[in-house]
Length: 260
Image 1 (cartoon, helix red, strand yellow):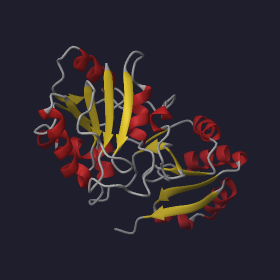
Image 2 (image 1 turned 30 degrees about the vertical axis):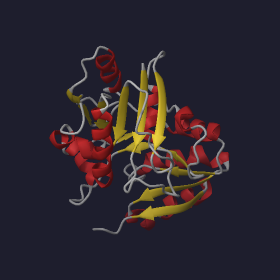
Image 3 (image 1 turned 180 degrees about the vertical axis):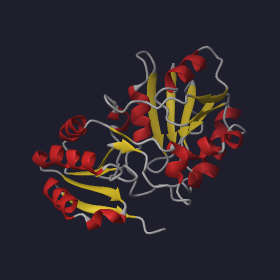
Image 4 (image 1 turned 120 degrees about the vertical axis):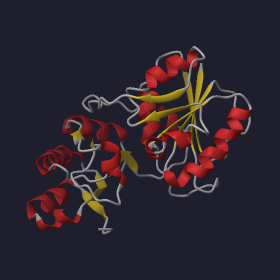
């Protein structure tokens, strides 16, 4: 069996700041032996119209939904089944199901083995949901799917999922609810060390949902000598201890949202 991961772009054309899409590294790590995987990221390369594959899996944001549906229509006309996951299909599964054979709702780790099993039996279809939340301890990322692709130099790394705030304009609370989960800091540090990259971007939507856990991460990163960036809420600036710990551990950039 062969599975093709597809990451659509907004316009169908190349983007020059594309980062590795970690969702596919998560799914690749959950893919059993004997299933071949490949990735086409439209931000880097054209997606072939004639794909020799048994299943297409797409991650879809609202801003890429129109393009994702265009691509999915083409695959399905040629007899290739399509499964969609990500934020947009999770929020609008019935809409996504008009363009896909199946839709994964929420985090994909627990759903992916069942999707693959159903696809192998020719029984893929409908909505896939598991209300359990995957434990992030021991989380695995198979980055071999990115090999040979010209992504931005910054390596994306995830520490946790969720946010302690419930801003009405934001999709994070709507997707994760009140769940706040972090990986063990030591596991994150081991991953960062193994990557061997000069710059790492911690892609958590808000790194400071749990300040003691964030400080634990900083202590784990400090001996590595890496430079890193993150996304934060502005309240962190009022805590000098946190700011100093960030600096010592190598933080050189922080993205702050001022929407509220």
